[in-house]
Image (cartoon, rainbow, N blue to C red; front, side, top):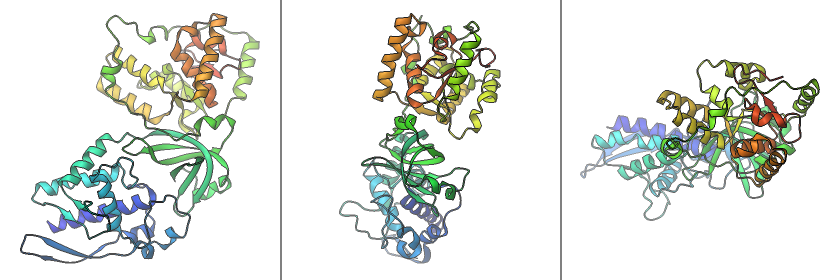
Length: 449
């Protein structure tokens, strides 16, 4: 049993060290040599006692000696590693928070939780527990890998919200070039740590230091639902249209969509009117105005209407292919966005059409790959009221569809161009200051002209 224990401990200590310094137990790319050295715990010997206890002895480096460069830069988080600690201390801290089910902890993520959960296999084969060296964690905070720790880790892992695409705006306060770590101050008292995983080398971001930026990537959340870090791959200077993103991202939790969003018997699907509603051709003046409006649109990409997302869930969709060809969504620096009401609409459509499990899984992956913008911001509320008032005054069809108005309001406040095949709803707003929108043919995906 000693062999498997040593193997598991080696991997767990590495995860704990990465978690302590990077807020990520499974950081991608090459592991810095200093972090590898901090996790290099050398097994020396073992002995057995009469009460069926095996004692393992290790040589353990202090973190300050193994990774001195990490303590010479500005600290990114107060609860980070200390110079006089070891890898065992970092693991002990994580185990304490796991066993106490501290959901707001920054000492573990789902990767480390799964690593701890994997010890259940050894526990089933007769191992009772693995007690770590004595630490100063306090009474009742025994740093042991046992059945209690495995059970708590499994529960926390299952309840942790999945990653999702997020965007933030704020001042780039820390740029750790050697560690690829970023820290963005969103507002007083609110900051987000990010690991840079973009195609550009992190040295290319030096011009952004101490300036307002907009940063995008996969948001990784704590078990509580608060943001732990962002695995970032896109950055640019922030503009006025990016103020919407000066907030801490929140987890997007989807539970039992089948039962919660299922249409009632006889209820008409929201999508009954989406297809086949091709608007009449506009005049040359209208088209020129739309082109000018497009040129003035924000550079942070597109917000997709629900009908566009629907096509992206279909294999070999010609509409999706046409949209990609025209707008190059897959190669854009920033990902396409959706309004959060689109998620509910898509699940309602999936339930009404009795989608199979494979297509539901594709829908989940599609949603996870997009930037989801919540509608809780007061600026979106105000724009919704303005748009609906305008639609009612003009007798526009969209006045009766509150979800479409939410989508339009979100696109406007986020400074994005809305892409939609719903000409009946959005064509009246083309070329106007109300919302920057491109209406596409629902059969071909081409811009309606």
